[in-house]
Image (cartoon, rainbow, N blue to C red; front, side, top):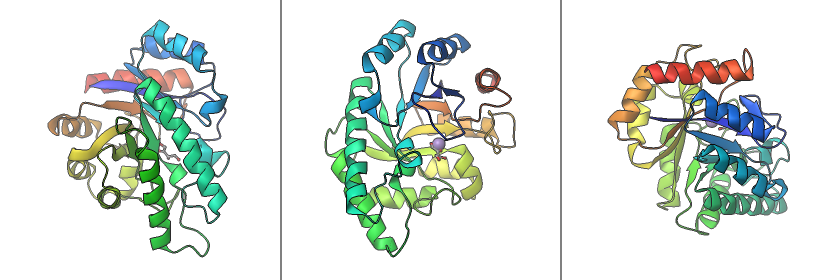
Length: 265
Ligand code: LER
Ligand code: MN
């Protein structure tokens, strides 16, 4: 199994990030801890020093399995389902620029909170139509760039909380380069059975996040990670398993405990 951990390239208010900033220092640490890759969260590719980033990635020979994009929502409230047309268009433009960066890094584009929420007078059907149209528009750019929709728990959004609703959405989107990202933290809240839900997503599972039930490193809560990893192996998953965890008790210990524990399974 290939393991990665999330590093935020730009300041972020999102808490489940073991590492934020200091790209040179943190990428060196991630490599030294034995991770096989580094997942990056990027608020705006236009504000990223790509040459610097790519030289550090090359120096440590670390691939980037996926790009997190939710900070466009977290910091700027851009979303595919905002009632305002102008905001939806800015969200689509931002994700298109993430897709271009992803193509250069050979990474998957994560569609997490940038999908937004169903809010105000917007009905479910309209929100879903906007979401499907936005996904299609972004995914049409380049069929080799993959997009992964992440079912996210009900306390963060009311659109696509479960694997089943994610699968139903994929059917409506109908594009081979649009699949799912599953996250054990959200699944522990929303799914009747984490392992059955992983099996249900077998054909379209592009990426996988791990955090324990309390969003600490795997091993610090009550998720059965042996069963999770066994099920990923059983369905023939060949992607990365990426730690999206709170920096507790501190960044380095969280990252160290996560990889050490996952490697024992
Ligand atoms: C992002 O991958 C995630 O899991 C969400 O909780 C972001 O809020
Ligand atoms: Mn996640």
